[in-house]
Structures are given as C-alpha cells and as structure tokens.
Image (cartoon, rainbow, N blue to C red; front, top):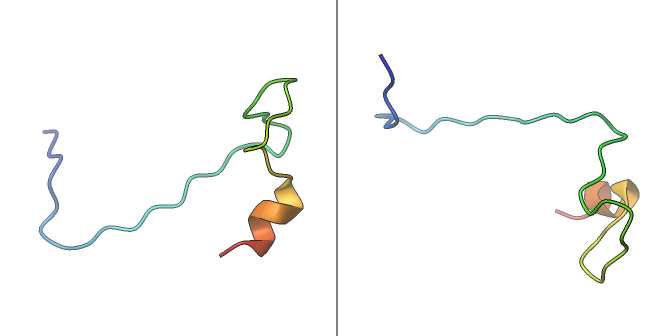
Length: 41
C-alpha cells in the first residue's frame, strides 16, 4: 500500500553518480562545482 504521509519526520539521502551533470554541457550562473556544493551548508 502506498502511503504518502508519515506520522513522524522522515529523512532521506539521495545519491547520484559523481559524473552526473545537472546542467548538461551548458555552464550557467546557477551551476556549482562539486567542491562548492560540499562546502555550502
């Protein structure tokens, strides 16, 4: 049975291969390197 509501908080972590490109081959102002993403929190 699919239940899209949780009675308590549920935390998940999503992992992608390191070679996954989110912006394709186009560099935009919003694109960040992996290092920038790991240092930001």
